[in-house]
Amino acid sequence: QVKPQFESRAGRNCAVFTAIAYKTQVVAGTMYFIKVQVSDAEYVHLKVFLSLPHENLGPSLVSFQTGKTRDDPLTYF
Image (cartoon, rainbow, N blue to C red):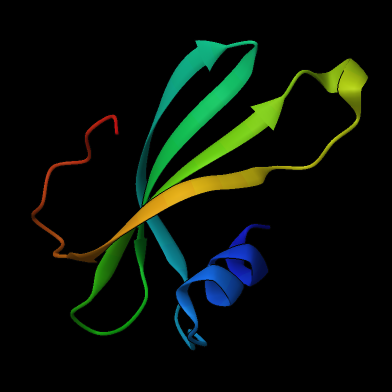
């Protein structure tokens, strides 16, 4: 659901956009840290916020880190 937000902010189109792993952090909603494969050997880490259900908002891309590999640990950022 956040692929268009990432592509717009990163200034690129991704033929591949597959979530590999994720972690969550409960705040006033849920913060997701997601490792996403964007090409054969390139990965990005996304920080996505999902508000509480009563707010009726979709997921929002907060920030991202590029230049990651499959082996890079997924950390809170």
